[in-house]
Length: 168
Image (cartoon, rainbow, N blue to C red; front, side, top):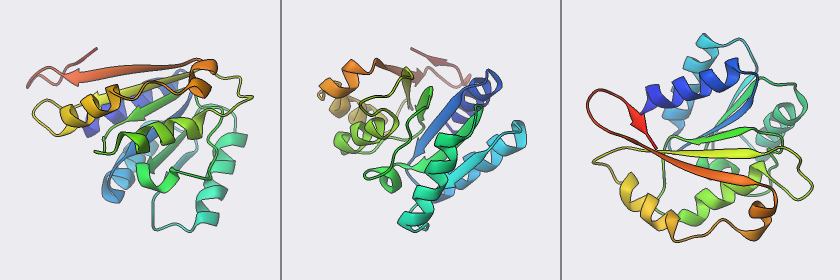
């Protein structure tokens, strides 16, 4: 899935968007950030649990304040609360977690009341992985009212076979 995450992030960045990528493991986070930096010249933050809360806030502030394109690659758990990523155009989930509330909480980091940017949220779901269970859990949680007001749209992609294609 890593190559699909990188490809979708790079395409959005090349189109001048601000992108957030949510992953589960620090190692994945670092690898994806490195690949994006190699492909696109723009600010790319890599945020995970090894950073202090102040360090995470500093990276988020840079992301909020820079002009697009910009990318914020992070672990899902590292930005669950008390961080603002307002202004993103696209949020990609390259990994899912069994607790759907963590995914919804991360979605909320990108859109707060008063936000003006529309947010597209894409979930990449690997065939034959635990992603299917996590997606079923997430589907049971409706988009919260505050996110509906902000015009957040979720799209689920799944890989359709060994040829590496991803479909809605």
